[in-house]
Image (cartoon, rainbow, N blue to C red; front, side):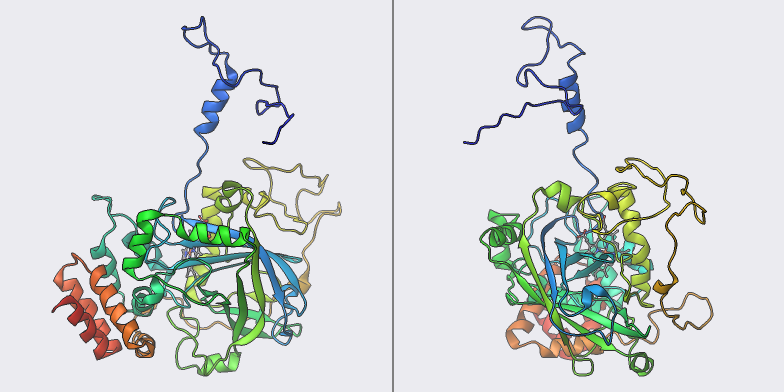
Length: 478
Ligand code: HEM
């Protein structure tokens, strides 16, 4: 046993003489209100929690590095993506729908959020283990999430709500097909791929913009559970993915992912048969091949779950020079939503916490606010412009302009978008066993759903491929 000579103190550093017995009037008597030690302990305990994330509440994370092995400077000037660059990172995996204490081995999308601590500030790539998403217009995000969370009256998850929403939102079919397939229930976090999912941009030294998709391919391979296997796991452990990741890293079995990109030029985007900024679509690899870029490794467990994993705050708004966004409406909404969530969940100065703090100097003119951790040293330069040598903008960081056109309007995103070809193609790629799993998983997930909703959803499967609809009908016995 380790011996420790440190003296226990209050939060103000005052030594504590007795941490076993409260201060009372007589040995059986009532407590004295001057037992500040007790008051502080109880008060602090009442403040041990912060709100859980509104989505992706249950997660596990680790530190690691991104190493760039290939030259992609023709596409980007970002220092983090130059050949030879090695960048520290923090990767948080998560399930989406469950609360902070939910079981890991659930059928759900897995979050794959990476914070790269680059020499040009933090780059956060907040992705999933799927290349597409359920919706293409952010107006629908809160509605969609409500169907994944608990019913307000029963406080139970609702199959009816999920299929009602999906059957009324044909754009969800691609992601629903992935979720209900064998890949919808990963064994753990090491055996999944990661995707930036959205189309982003890369900008090179000549200020040319390219559209890009980011991919992380698991070197561990893909491993999934069937529903029955997962039920047996959950009966024993709700923390199966956390246990797997933490213990693998403790054993020094460091998980790795190959980092790759797909590139689409401006000219290709203009003639692309589908909207390349539609998050419900993948870019076919035949037309837009994967390009090797580097390797990502996780090699260090967090020291403290709350301080590091729970307080980690990722946001698609964090980009560095040479990497930027695209017109994807979903991505644009996410640029707002995350930092707003952090200000509420963690606090105004969440970026100053050690886990979030960039490894570069931060020079803003934001003032004050609750829990400002540092003592700013800007003298008279507390506004901008100023004559006192305060930090200034630098026009060399300007992005190239991107063209926009059209009237400001609420365009119906369900018109003129093909929601069926890609899910149909994915279905036809599955082998017989995978198809059987898909049908069975859907049938089980439809338990208790009214027939009208089931029929509406099967009509969508039919449009993707008649064999898809037929298989589900058969599994449901209709
Ligand atoms: C977490 C909003 C779509 C991946 C979150 C959080 C919010 C949010 C508010 C909680 C943040 C926090 O409290 O720390 C949205 C909105 C979306 C959207 C408004 C669409 C308009 C997506 C998509 C992806 C994604 C398309 C993946 C491609 C994640 C991940 C997390 C997350 C991985 C957890 C990050 C972490 O580990 O802390 N989202 N989201 N989200 N979201 Fe989204």
